[in-house]
Length: 257
Length: 294
Image (tube, rainbow over all chains, first blue to last red):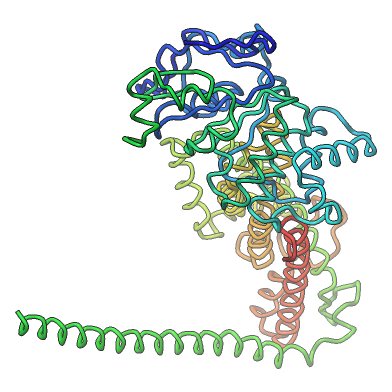
């Protein structure tokens, strides 16, 4: 079922992963490889485990009372739950959330918070980071004259691109996106999608989306989840044009979810 | 069917009419309440100003207090010292405890909820009880005597629950998404709290501290038991002092210098007003910096 791409090695591997919230079995025996310099989309109805899977990659699930995970999740062969200090893991695995969540401070301060956390103090260096991150997230032209203005005054779409810039500023290798456009209008969504597509040459991107059209537009591979199970994972166009599992077919035809 | 519809419709109209009548009555009642409140507070302020302002003169601010000249200068200094010391202690302990409860514990756990209730109750306990406790513990047991230190410690304990609770509320009101954003960038818990959560909670924390200032400045009962009533500049932390409120109480209860008690009230009002305006300006500035003027 897997379609390996020889030119881009598997960076992330889930081996027999089970996850629980208290008694609730959220992920069941997941085996999955995620490749570098690709966009991998995770789709499926609400509560299917796709967000749990995403958040197990930067251990944001640790914050939830009663969360438990068994099996192995590895990044470049290192076990995310055993071999990593959680803060250095999160420096390598950045995240963009469902609702834009800029900090209530200036645009510049939002972006330099991460690099400063990881020890960059030279202000010239920080300026360069700010500029580069904003250019990468396609926000630079809109905000270059108001870097010291509050981020809270930006529009929703701009705030989300700022959050992408904030994630890029710590130079992660992997970027997790949890339905990054679900709170945005179609025009803002299109801009974010363009940004994401631009970024895939440099990063490993994993995006959770409710929007199947979005998965189709931007992702290289798509994984379909249902009730905590990984039903099918393939090249995106194959999955949508010729789903192998009848549950996948039913879902992409809009029969449920 | 038609008949039924009509009755329903007419019932609807009459209900709407009663509702609008009730709404009108409620509005008028609320208006009356507002006017009465304003009149009471405003009237009291005007009364105090009329009674007090004519007696404010230079002799009130002489450094030395004696039986010929009941200067309130030393009381102003004592009040400021008392406020600074008590609030620093209450602030450090209260904010620290609030950070622990809000950020490091499960906020719905039974223990935390009962601590919250306990503190809420403590915040409402009459100050004289704190005074009695302070006297027994600091004045007698720790042999501090009637002193600035014993008074400050007592007042610190007295406003600790208030500061703790308001700070905790302010911290809990900070959206979880800010914490998640910070943690996801690889910032540790401590960094997240000090650089993201506390700045965002600042306005709430400041208003809690202001309530504390109000309680400290207005306190008499607890202080008479712990700081005494000596109207002089303190030589050390162990000197007895007399804050403005206590000064007012003494003047008024002696009955000889009521006019000076009113003058003191005016000075106290002015002091509280200055502190409030200053902190209001400060937090407005912070808010502008954080959230923008737009």
